[in-house]
Length: 634
Image (cartoon, rainbow, N blue to C red):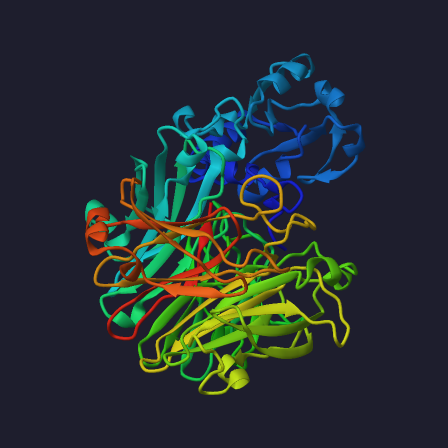
């Protein structure tokens, strides 16, 4: 059984209560809080907002002598909750409780409503005792405002020649935030706090490097995770970042991005190893309670058989789960489903090759709320290609580019899909019909198998689009995903990334598509963040102008170079053909003097007010190693 907590709803958005009671500072205060309540005698729980179960999921209430659970909504009377049958709060006076615990924050008004109902000599207390300090809140008057809990977890390690570097921008300032600050809590593999600190957010680039953190606090080698809490956030409670993982040797260069702040029941898109590889799933507990042995597991996609580890993972702890230890028969291109039970945010996985090379990527949230939508096959007359998933085809003379469609909803029994390949000019070069893939099918396609070893791309590179193909029938729900794997043919270094489909560049809207980062759909503009890698690494970016229906002939895309202080240094405009793409490097676009002026930790904002672009970024060294992942916007 997974945790009984509310995390994210596609109707209401992200929940903040579990973050409020699971925050490391709240967890630290919860131990003496519960001990004090237990010492006072019997306890009655007043649960007017239905939050008591979520609190109990993260904090062990076994030490409390609970003698009753009381509710306000008459429709909730008689329900089973915390081992009790709920009673109307008007029955509270007959309780023997010495303490009435009100399961709510901002509870002063709630307590005032029932003060006359308290048992004789009983004391009313609330979860307000676990509040973070007001100077850590964007909105102290509304404690569960999601902006108060703009947090996310970060895979973080430094040791054995391996390092991590988080890079993002203070994009909250663009929404009017003032005096933004950052609070960090670094945990080791056992969930013990290694370091905790607070610092003002710079106006431009935010960089947190594991080597600097380790030196600053005099830490030993560590493998764990870090919680990042943005204080004073405005406009956006989602903490987005790029995460570079690198080593003292080039064979460890890789990148991924934010962990998605809301733990889910399932994740998918985890690849099985191929010969000569180990795949390790990094299970990093997001909560102040342990993950019991057997509570999480792996299964082959399409199989009901779940293999579970017999290891307990401590609160905020990290565990490297070897896929082969649970599913030794699984081999690429097989893909795995992660039974996560809401214990952890979107996990990273690491692929370790016998050659010593390694790479990191992430699984994706598998939705449980979707069913096939009969309207989607009928929308082609209005939305053209409709939902499509664009990804680069890197230069054919140096890279192999592979796509693996991945089921990403528990209701997806089939995937009727096809693949369109475009030259950088926008010309369609090839089409592949995967057919009506069953959920248990795992079919990977290297683009050379479709267009030939010499390629059919005059530009030498381009992009591919995974689309629905109903030629053989089948159903669809719009949640179309795939894993994209890239291999440098000379060095053998590999990178991979995964994402889901959207509707692109049409003024017609359907179910919130084309997606907009701010405001209502359609999203027809671009603001992407490109972090610049430190020398001698070379930054690359691949921008794709995908369109579900014909749109503007070319983009009007500004590449805006910023210094680490956030000031604009230079800008150049490029035009990308509709249906085409552009692979570029900042050192080819901007003058050397401008790059020098931008300095260390410079970044580029890709801005276009005429169309929505999809982007991928990476770093390259001189020895054939590279990283590659999709970009984030804000």
